[in-house]
Length: 488
Image 1 (spheres, rainbow, N blue to C red):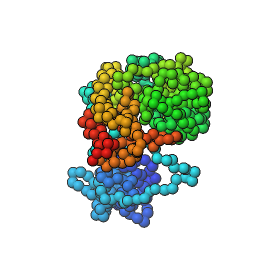
Image 2 (cartoon, rainbow, N blue to C red):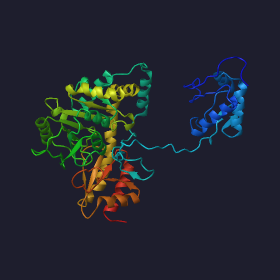
Image 3 (cartoon, helix red, strand yellow):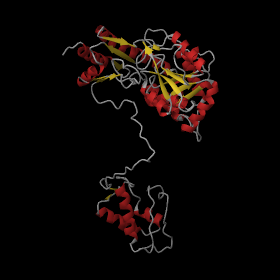
C-alpha cells in the first residue's frame, strides 16, 4: 500500500541510501508487481550476487520506508518475505541481516583483452611454511625492537596535525634532513636534504629511476643478482647485460660493454656476498663517465658489518656527483612493514624523480613519515642498529663456528657483512640435491638458479639469517653439517 502522502518514489537512484546500503533501489509505481515484491526481488538479487554481503545489517523498516517514500508496511512485508525464504535473518534487538548462506558461488572471471600478455610470476619468495628452520634472505628480526620506543613513535605520529592536503612528494623536509644526517653518520655519505627522496622501499626507488632511461635501454646487471630488481628492469622494457662477478664483486674491465645504467650491490653483493673493492668501484665510475651512464648503488644492508672496515660508497667516490643514485632502506634496519626507504640522486635528476613519484602516488604516507622522524630524532634508530648488529653478530658467529669446519667440502662466502651468507659446495655435492634433503629434515634454504640469468649457476646454498635466533641458527646449521658430511 502506497503512503497517503504524495512524495514520489525515488527511482533510478545512483547513490547508496544514506550510506546504509551499497546498492541503488528503484521501485516503480503502477507496475503489475506490488511494491513490496519489487523491493524483495531487488534485495534478494543483491544478496545472492554478493552485492549485499553476508552479515550486513539492513536499515530499519521505518528508515528505509522514508528513503523510498513508501509506507513502513511495504518494507516490513518485503523483509518478512525474505526472512521466510532464508535470504534474511531477523534477531530481536539486533536488526535484520543478510543470511550467511545467502550469496551464491559465482564464477565472475572473464577473459582478458586480446592484446594482454600475462607476465611471468614475480620472482619473490612466498609465505614461509610453518615449522622448521627458515634460512630466508631478506628477512629482518624484530626481536630487538624497543617496543616502548616504537609505540611512542606512533603516538607522536598520531599527535601530529592531520593535514587536509598532500604532503611534499619528495618527503617531508624535516624527515629528509634527518635521513641525510643518518646516512652521513652511518655510511659516511654527505648529501643535502634536497638530494633526498623518501620512497616506499628500494624497489620503488629503482622503478622511479628506470623511468629516467630512454626506451629499451641496455642495463648492466650482476649475472647472479637481486631477482626482483632484475624483473623490474625487464618489466620496464629495458634489456640486461650480464656483469661478471668474482669473490670481490662485479668485474669491470676496459671490455665492459656500454650501457645506460649499471645496477650493483657493492657493500654486500646480493646474493653472492662479496664486497666490491675500492679499485673496482673507481673502475665502475670511470666506466660510467666513459659511456655517459648512471649507476644504481643499492646499499640494502650496509649497516651490518662484522669486523670489516667500512668501504667508501660509490656515491661518495663520485667526485662530480652526477653518476650515482644511492638507494637505502629501513626494511633491514627496522622492519619491512614500514615500507620506507630513500634515494639520493644527482641534483639535475631530482626534479624528474620527484615528478615521477608525484604521478605514481603523490608521496609517502604522512603518519609513517612522522613516526620514522620521531625514531630518528630521538636516536632510537641508532640505538636499534647497535642492538641489532650485536644480535646478528651472535647468529653469524654460531653459523661460522659450526659451518667453517666443513671446508673444503663447503666454504662460507660473504661473511664480513650483511644478513646472509653463501655456502659454496664442492663436487660431487650438488646444491639442489642438498637443499631437497635439508627440506625433508625441516631446514629450508635457497639455491641460486633463480638468481642467475647468465653464465654458470654457482653451486651454493643461500643462507639468510636475519630472521633467526641463535638457537634456530645452531639447530639448522647442525643439520646442514649432517647432510653435507653424509651422516645419518
